[in-house]
Image 1 (cartoon, rainbow, N blue to C red):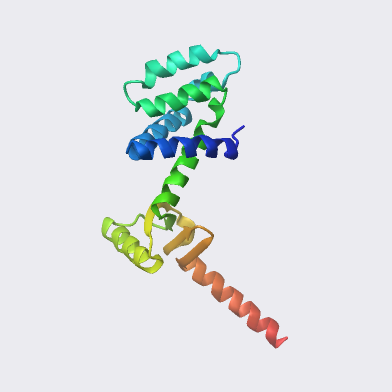
Image 2 (image 1 turned 90 degrees about the vertical axis):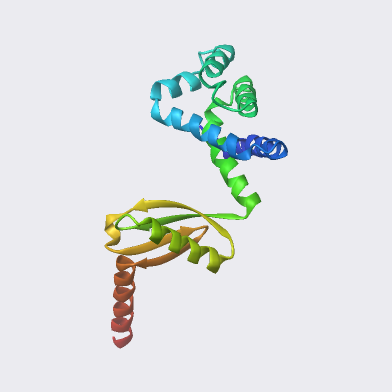
Length: 184
């Protein structure tokens, strides 16, 4: 069971150290690679989380797998987490690390959904417009949702910018419903 508070503590300590040594991007990439490996390989995840496997054995395996691929700082946080039996919190540390980096750098994470894939020119134009209107840098994640029919839906923080055909149809339905109730 992941604990966000614990993940945030480890991520904060890791981020502060990574920033001090100017390796934030490398550490973020390392954490992403590790969590991707956990997601891709259920046997690896089971091994890492298994309570019957000793911490020393887990550390030895992780060092063999990752020591030449990740920074020493990332390897050190993995060792500490294994020593403290917090290996199940690795995905939470990765998510919190990204969140802390975005907050520190003034970056807004946005999810952009469209019915069809957007061209590179469309993505660039949309990001430029969002950067200008929000006054912040946007880090976008794109998704395809055929239910939208057409247009684009942007979600960031607690805000939703709905420029989809489905959104327009829903607004029209609500307006008609409101007008009908007003007449009754």
